[in-house]
Image (tube, rainbow, N blue to C red; front, side, top):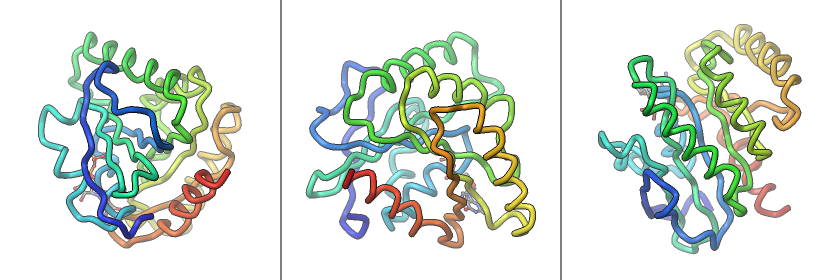
Amino acid sequence: LFTRAWTFARGTPDLDHLPPDDRPEIAFAGRSNVGKSSLINALVGQLRLARASNTPGRTQELNFFTDPERDLFLVDMPGYGFAEAPKEKVAAWNKVIRAYLAGRRTLLRVFLLIDARHGLKPPDDEILDLLDGAAVSYQVVLTKADKIKPTDLEKVMERTLKALAKHPAAFPAIIATSSEKGLGFEELRGTIAQLLES
Ligand code: GDP
């Protein structure tokens, strides 16, 4: 699945222009700069897949990627947590995301990307509430694991798992990744393959 030539299928800022829900879907959410494009590119082994759509203006869109066999959509969700983002923009974003998460019947899981150096932070509470409220299956993926020492990574993973215990909808396992070093992708691909089989 991940050795195929993935392509950009569609980008949309609203729910009126979603692609048809004719195949399973996996979405990726996270704060701006968390390493979301890098992770999607590393996942499919294509350097520029997600980045190509990450031109300004596209970043506030839901971007859909698919493989040639149309077995799966990967969805790059708009980054959140811009300190300078105007309130009404954040509210509009939340509305679209909430509706997307609640209404997309083919959505198998949302991977919530968290920077391994920081772990869960207050700005992430909002997205956690949103995910809990949407009753969607979601799982935390730590990014940029190469930037911290293995012992610190273990501590962050422990801390994050503890915090997630308060969120029953969260999948009780974390995947640590480094797009730079190619770490954690066998686990991530394996998790997605399992979801597709179930
Ligand atoms: P996005 O805004 O979430 O799509 O983030 P990007 O994928 O554009 O990455 C933001 C920055 O973090 C870029 O400068 C990347 O080179 C860097 N980055 C992303 N992933 C990794 C990683 O695994 N390790 C390291 N060291 N840097 C990374």
